[in-house]
Amino acid sequence: SAVFAGMFVASLVVLFVLQALLGIGAPN
Image (cartoon, rainbow, N blue to C red; front, side, top):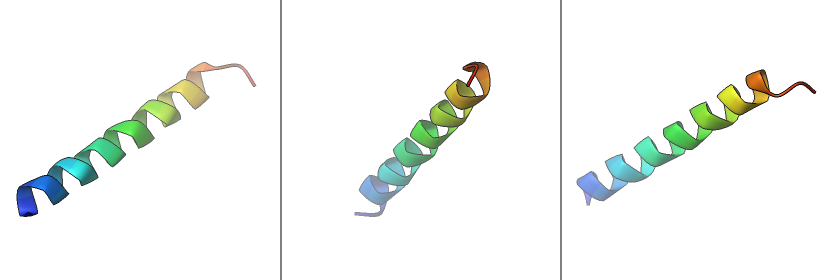
């Protein structure tokens, strides 16, 4: 359904943002 699709997209965005923050915070 549309609600499930929205939640799925939102979860992907959250994971992407968390990865970006971890990538910036971690000294490579």
